[in-house]
Image 1 (cartoon, rainbow, N blue to C red):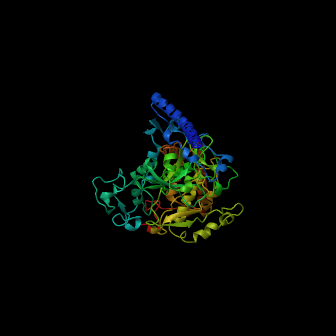
Image 2: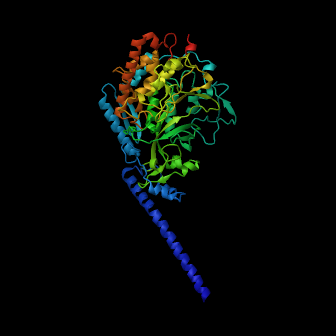
Image 3: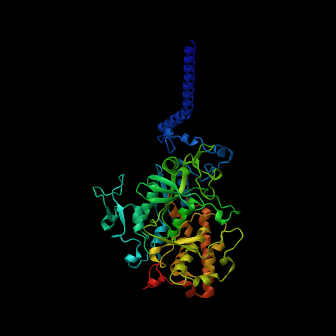
Length: 559
């Protein structure tokens, strides 16, 4: 009798357990079923389906699994930019904002009719009178490079560049019918079949990262916004979170997520070394570099990334994966690991799991193209109280002029170009720069890491121009282009406005930042005018055009 009662009791306990499990599962599935019902009804009425980038079945409840520090997230305030203006908008909202921005820009400019229409979330550019086209037709933007020898190109196409033509998955750039299992050298016949990131690398030479009218760059920018992301990892080093994203065509790019909205300025009490790195600053810096005809910034494009499918689900970085969580507003957030702003208070949140960011194409790997890192002579102290030597010594440039590699060639003039570039976007964080080791000292400076630009449109930081005011040296090509961009028929702000509209995340800069560039350009020209008045035109302006039609041509190679 006791045995029968014991068995019945066990069966009863089992039934209660099964009922409890069933109820728990139903409670979890009920919100998903409701969302699916709402999504299907919306799709039937509007034909759009769910606006979320992932299906309801993929609701990231798994991220709410027990954590080693469960109280950390509930006690701290989660920073959520999703309710801020110009934040990570869903696709229809982003399309609407872009259309309104284009309409507003069209009304504000009578001489330029650059209109953009949106059809199914895609932009179509309808160009009328383009200032960019007029600029690119100007003789200053049509100078030619000298003949490039093997010593002037980063790679020798016939012997150095090899690429595997048979990846695991078929690619659009793959040669059909190629059954070879060998690495084949890059030649003229095979170069067109290579991915755009490799063609970009092949085009690097002593004088430029890419040529003015290279169609590969536009294709590469498109790849950055459309290629499937296959893996994600945190970049080591640096003060703020950056991700290395790998694509299906084996290319890689550096992803900087959105931390501030377009209209937020750097707080006045922030030091330059603790400022946020802005994704839109990276995008704008690439376009500004092209408008100035420097072409020393690697291609950068904006992209709306799905944090669920394109970061969390593809990363093998456990440290990154563990920082994902769901905010009280039901948005997906993560914060990674870094020196500054990597905590729940400064978490990066999507809406619900989409986030803006900039993707900068990688330069060739250091194993095949070594780069040399140089300390900027006008590097700041990066200290709250100490000042650098150049800030207290007005004759500091005289010492720099006598120090290699600034005592010959165009290195000092390239630093002046970089100074003007930084001043126009308000970047105070230029502590080092890099060059390709193969070209020695007779080559251009690579303008990397521009995320701390465009932080304050209401303030012009004149200390950035100290190298120019102390040295009073500039290339003639740079000087003439600056004068050209100050003219009403071109106007730097209008050119930037038109160029930035090509990006997927447009508008990139708000109007006050565009107007600030015009104001700063006038300040640069005033400094140069004062230098010419004080030292004479020939002493200030270095003629790099006479007999050599390239602004990047080293002095030692002049003809």
